[in-house]
Length: 501
Ligand code: XIL
Image 1 (cartoon, rainbow, N blue to C red):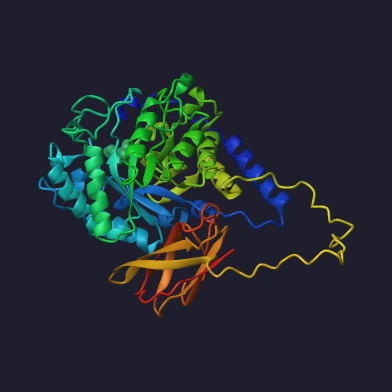
Image 2 (image 1 turned 90 degrees about the horizontal axis):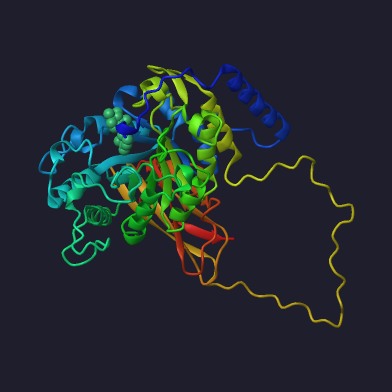
């Protein structure tokens, strides 16, 4: 990415009056929508209401209170990369920074994204390693943190720059060999580091009964097109990889480091691109968001705050876009500080919100697929609806007795460690489709829930009730959906009871 970076220094484009106007604008919205539910005042709370996480990249020396207050997910910015934690034989070393971050996330009810296992950059002692060594490292790293890592970036930046649609020919991707050159890596004699690393990661997850989801992550894969309407071949290549290896890949990350490079501007088809990956059945995340404030020169947006709003909206409008992560807290502490691409200014724990922050919060508070609020209160019909007169000659409509095989059932699988656990609950529809569900279970005393995903929750200890969120209520006959929760204490003998609606 560094070659893409623009060093142009310009005066801040987000002038104070704009920020003030935005603030005033959101105040007006809040007033006019009263008595609707009050808007949330932190990114994590607003995101949770909309059913997604809002995360941040972090380092152990920057674990200020704001991290847990504003964000519900944490990605180690550098502390889980091979150059930090891998030995040349695929073992682990220097994991204390990563441990600190995982512990901090857990005690602040944040999800963790492991970043990253196979990458051409920051490869450290794994530079030039064989697939067998990579596989050893993949096993060691995944098993060290188990289900405490919700998502792992198994393969990062597999594809070349400049919209060629080709894979990188750099370590460790030289392990790619397409023997007959047909672009398909499944023929005899082919080797494919992407596929083989995912197969290994999936084996480790399954052997350990882990809930960890496995992701592929890249940049300049955001839109269906790049600037000028040219097809985004890099995004297309990523799409093909996910489609071909779908059985091992659970999630896709768009890094979304937006800058003035023509391949990394924000196009109007970002949402459509997220949607086509979602249609493959994977979760989509915006994983490393920062937006150059010069981007307003090049993009159809008019400024950084509006560009942030567009990205957040594109994610919110696709149910399977389940999280957004910004790549740092504040401009001055960012890897691209000259681009002033983040949501806060300031540093060392003392931060000021930018216009971009307020835009993101406001957009999150609108939720998924918002419909315009009614300007007038709904009219109460003056004539109450009447039941049609009963024709005595017509037999009463048959009453269908409830079918005992409809409804739903639920099972729990647990991954436990000393002092905590992650539960994955599978909700299976009976012989008829269901359009909503709720699951009730009772936790043993001393256990409580700290974090939930893919469900709404009432209660944290004792009897706890979970119900579907907007995108997973409909389950076809015999099919299932899963949600999960993390907790402290010991959770054994859980007996979930499922009710369908
Ligand atoms: C960056 C970090 O932010 C920097 O501190 C480090 O010096 C280099 O890496 N894509 C990725 C991230 O997947 O890991 C990179 O993070 C940014 C680009």
